[in-house]
Image (cartoon, rainbow, N blue to C red):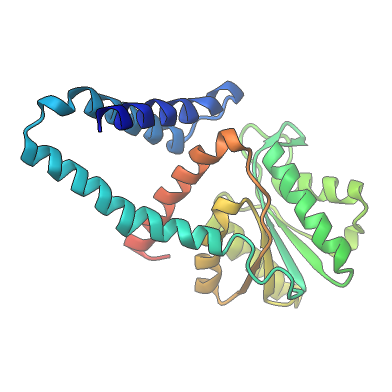
Length: 241
């Protein structure tokens, strides 16, 4: 048990630390680093912990895995690519960080996935959703439009929503664009795989018929964003969408 806990703790710690090389630090790896450190400490002192307390901690960890983490993870996998081949007429691309005027890797990958769908479905249109952050020179929506036009998508097929600051606003404000332009509320949401389930819950709340096509995350950043997303989903389950 000691070896397993220490090995797992150091493995997870390195995985949560890896995104820091690219300057990525958020609630996901902050919590992950802390949890990994606690797991290592638990492994170091496990022989000195009273049996009742030790069993209680292990039962708590197992319950969290079975009751919370596993069911949420199953749904995250289930809705990553959901009804993506059914031809939703409206695509919603969720924004991500812009570096000055250029898309971050995650944003570019989302644009690429949206391009593939729009290219295969010439009658589909897209709502590009994302405002302008304090360290961005243009909005995420404008950046996505520039990328998709450069890829070959006609600008007339692209609608901009450039005021949102989070996922809920992405979808709420995109719905306003859809209603204003009389677009279909059968939507295909493009975002990263870890993000689609939360998008699905919010779409359900707004009455949007959800489809999805996800872009894949880098392996070294996946656990960080997956952990942050788990925390967001827990908050949604506790407080409601």
